[in-house]
Length: 139
Image (tube, rainbow, N blue to C red; front, side, top):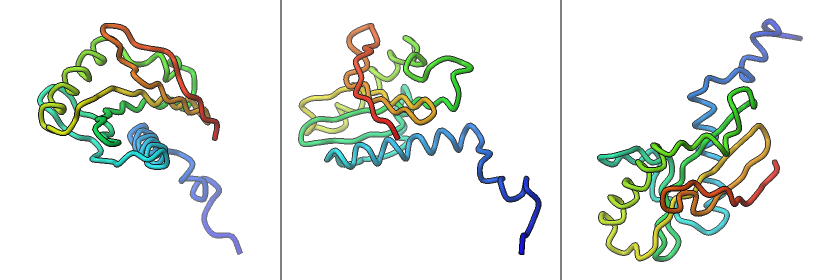
């Protein structure tokens, strides 16, 4: 026995952009947890920026920015970190590093999700430039 219309049954396939972003953040949290990082928080607010995911491993503090694109219509998620946003993330990292006295090392990572391709860019912000070296995952 079938219930509802076809559009009603497939409603879960239609996701808002906010929900798509939250799904990307959850995926980033799972990837970092599987790699041995301890998740300190999601959507952490600082005076200069909001950090998607904050995690640590030992004395390393990592700020993770998540960019997710369902399609390539507006460009790749890998290239969507703008210099102004990178600067805000670097200032947020300095603020968080002073908040956590145990953090001897710190970095900003970018998790870029394009459809089913997931790439982690370690040290995404290197001075004034955005690094493009990435670790790739395919789901």
